Image 1 (cartoon, one colour):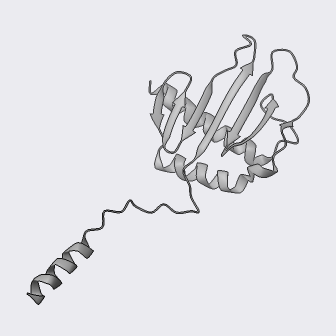
Image 2: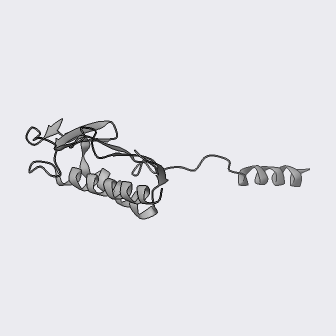
Image 3: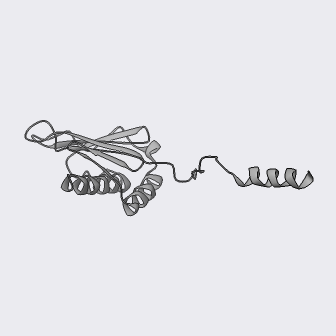
Length: 139
């Protein structure tokens, strides 16, 4: 009888059905970039990244491992809680207006670059836009 009880205890301990733990240091990415303005006034597109899922204004895709790792690094280095609401000068005619949101923190700017835009924000925009381009090219 003791052997059966020990066997059942060992068997129950070996069955771990708990969900896998996620590292607190690397939560899933939640990033979006929306645009408006440009000649049409409607912007030049958008991208939203939730976890590994990528949604663009045209189609959906998935992050590569390299893209996910790079976005996580940039996101953790960007300190979005320190972002200003907006950067740069007011828009000039037909200039694109970017709005970037990361983990509930939002900032915006006009044009491709602004002298006071934090380099991490610029790097996030650049990488997210490359991801968008890859996903759209695969539609």
